[in-house]
Image 1 (cartoon, helix red, strand yellow):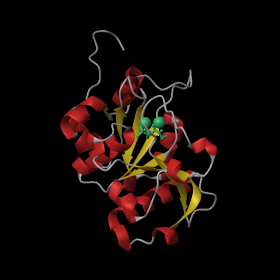
Image 2: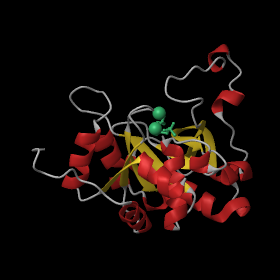
Image 3: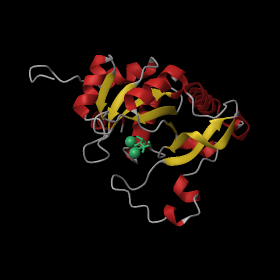
Image 4: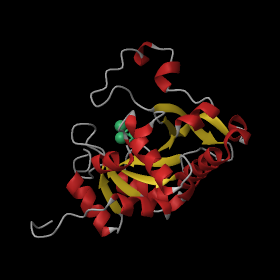
Length: 222
Ligand SMILES: O=C(CO)[C@H](O)[C@H](O)COP(=O)(O)O
Ligand SMILES: [Mg+2]
Ligand SMILES: [Mg+2]
């Protein structure tokens, strides 16, 4: 990007509007946290093509973040609270106090669970679960372990924690979407490191997608 070209920048309203139209958005958390940009979708809008875009253009872990009330409804724990093994103790993450990982699941109508069709089905059914709530029979519809990682959001979202888990759920809330979003880290094809914010902005501009810094979401939605 030449110095004369303005950096691709979206307002919070742009991002909320895009999310409300079922479009994916890019969110960079912060240089002093993960320093990662995630491609984030409303879970109900995720098609097999969207999973392919995450696989090919992002390359990170495809996860579904669910709100705290939804996780309470379906008794979805934090993984580190249920793994009875020494590896789950003394969790000393470099970027935050804890991860948001919960269980991994597949919808029971999937075959192996990993294909674009299978993962998109599991993801859309998770959006259904988040929409329906306690009438949804979670254990009848899903089994664990599976190929879609669930993430549990903090109860008070960005007031409590400023991870992509909470950014995604705060966006869903502001956009009137169900409390289930897909997040996938964007990695650099050459280096394997996190795609830089500059490169992520260029990707967003090229694909006419909204890009926003986490601090802008915290200021507006925190
Ligand atoms: O680790 C992760 C799961 O692939 C990603 O960083 C994802 O963005 C959610 O985690 P967090 O809320 O901590 O950012
Ligand atoms: Mg992470
Ligand atoms: Mg993250």
